[in-house]
Length: 199
Image (cartoon, rainbow, N blue to C red):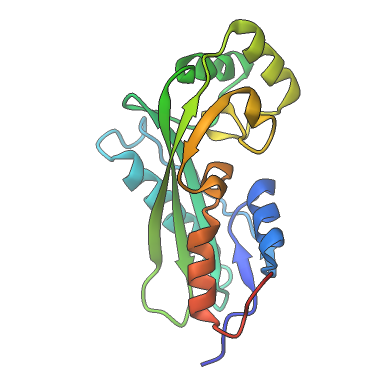
């Protein structure tokens, strides 16, 4: 069986694209056209179940248009004290999220789907990383929001953008915090094509 030499990324996230480029994995982008599930639309599902479902739905949405492609999809959320936090609605919502996360440890969950037409099933895994925030005062939050565009980021922050201002420590995959757990992606990539060893 021929190996996988190219992925179709079912995401418009620049951060996920940057991570794949850094790993040397060839890909093109196809943005899925669907509404993501969340705790409001599916209150009985756990955060892990929601990100898993969203990742699979994104992959299958794109597969309907590209049935022969190997598709990678992901969905990320932030969970703190039982609250599931997606992308902020506006700057005020972003500031409220950062105030809520201040001084606490939260979990970043990313559901990842790998859909290969050579396989019968879509592979789905969830990566979890623990992130502890510094105690943030109003000035720090305002300064951070002035420096970073957080509107497309779960939990209203980007670890890779001035993360030192707000993050005290992490436990687990750092690339998962950014939006794509590359340890898992590389596991699937290598297993699908052992001859490929991206730098």
